[in-house]
Image 1 (cartoon, rainbow, N blue to C red):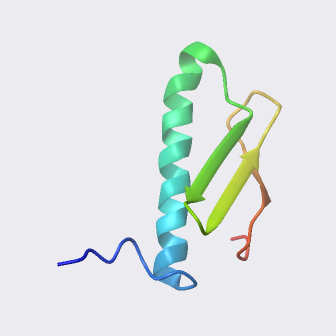
Image 2: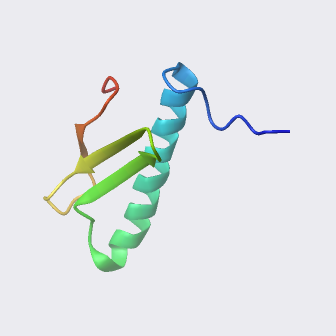
Length: 73
């Protein structure tokens, strides 16, 4: 049986999955930043479809979304 992934693109389920992916990346960055400092970028990718780039050069965990192919939430 083929697995359907995390939601059909363009649906609320897909948007929710991308938001969960961003939260996961943010949590990882916060854990790593204790030793190495806050990263200037968080990149969330659905390969072949969308790349969301969050940037913050203040070195504090408050990344802002730079651009997206879907509505910002």
